[in-house]
Image 1 (cartoon, rainbow, N blue to C red):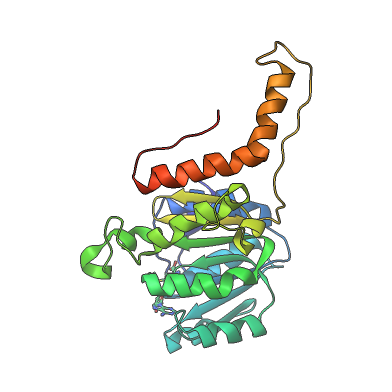
Image 2 (cartoon, rainbow, N blue to C red):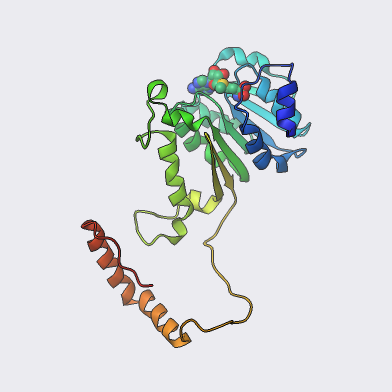
Length: 260
Ligand SMILES: C[S@@+](CC[C@H](N)C(=O)[O-])C[C@H]1O[C@@H](n2cnc3c(N)ncnc32)[C@H](O)[C@@H]1O
């Protein structure tokens, strides 16, 4: 059992409400921030227990910020825990938050779990997470809950469907189509992790990746000449020919034609 789960199990202070499998996820992505001078923002305060848990876990140098729509939560402020009252789906409110707190190392969205709330929060606050920070949104199970949240398998508008685009943005450096361009996400995200009901986005500034070769040749697959000719063709007019054939084939759902 890790330290967070231990704290949770032994908690006799303010109430905390968490899915048990989240503790391993937190530990995997948050442990490198322990005892550092960091800022953590959690959206969704409830009774205040999770803010106390973060304060205990990250140590005395951490500043913990909380956001909740319930005005009563303001009473839960204490040393190193600052609370803002407002809605996570109110863009103006979130813009004001950005002006009043420093860039954050860790953002945890455990608020209302409606898709619009998760999407607006991501759109407004993702760029307020530091370059090597972590963005975590939990309770994505609501994306599959038809009756309570209007979700469903592959249902447009859910946060899960919205977040599937992140996979394309992450790989956009390799896109050959105008429909997928390099974005700020491509340049600032190192990895995306999906768990049951949780997405974790690890940020890190990234340029277009490249390959290198080291070591000695074991055997010749193709003659170097053949390989060079192929590369020349695909980089020149051949690229446009193969690209055009593919647009045609895909329009008629006839599969793909490719060089290799
Ligand atoms: C699941 S509870 C948070 C649990 C808490 N993080 C914990 O671990 O104990 C969800 C909280 O989100 C708050 N909430 C609901 N809608 C919200 C909104 N639009 N903006 C901000 N907070 C909201 C609720 O008032 C509630 O306190």
